[in-house]
Length: 171
Image 1 (cartoon, rainbow, N blue to C red):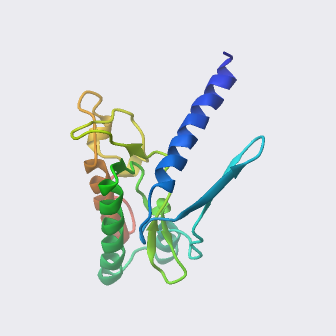
Image 2: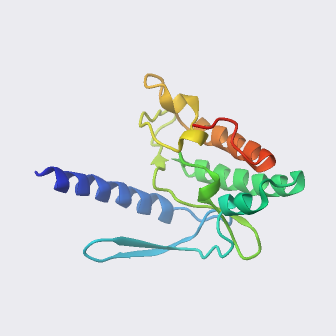
């Protein structure tokens, strides 16, 4: 099989996994999956409209958030991730740019492109993936693997960034 077709096949499998995972989730703090469709070149995923952009957009405008605002968003983020974990899914790419704000400034977790399904208790994933500033050390340790804890590391980085206006570790 030519390399371009192999790459396209892998991308298709990854997208199929993202769609399968995202459509299985239904929580007020997770972007609602509506449907998807495709043409010859692209796949389009229809989600909730989050008209106030992302938390990243808000931080860029405001530089940092007050403690009360941070507590408000972290509470919603933790609720959303607890739900995602209860469905045996690790997000693996939590960052300000993947946290979306509704018209009422509620938070919704989105972008499940790097998410992974956990199939048995204690299972560890070994794929190195995520966004460098938010990446948990376990992801980089090839021999140990990682699981749900990587999402909580990212939540800590998000919390720090909301209060300080910049991430604790810049790459």
